[in-house]
Image 1 (spheres, rainbow, N blue to C red):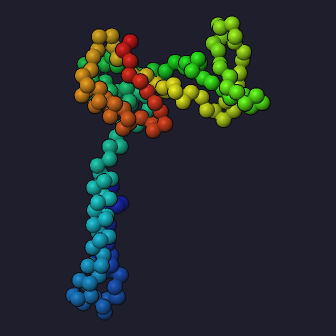
Image 2: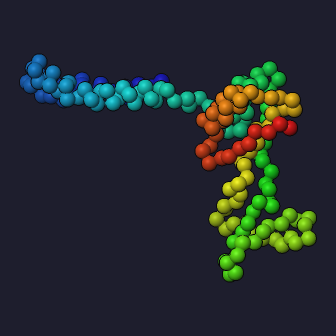
Length: 165
């Protein structure tokens, strides 16, 4: 890691004193005043070093991370985009002040509708699926660990489900 954040505030405080004031008592007083800043800097450096910034939230990295931890030999766990469930959408019609259901294209009541002008679609639908191979089972602890690993490395706004398939 870089040394950009390793700052010795006590030393800087003493060095900023004029040379004729650098007596032992004045230096000790400046060091005592600067000690809380040194402590906060040490805590900040410990926190910064504890962060895991080695992985990114891209699909390929997330899929590799999950396979490294749960299926390292065969690497069968996949990530795919979740299907959009159009039946779950209700749209508000402004002029009648009533909700309107969006039907599938194959249904008899289908009428084309504008999904959203602001880009808000599907708050109930997951964004992606973690697809485990057929017959692959996780214990409760493994699933908890997998969810924690995914939550730590995915984008905060994305939702997901874990499926077998």
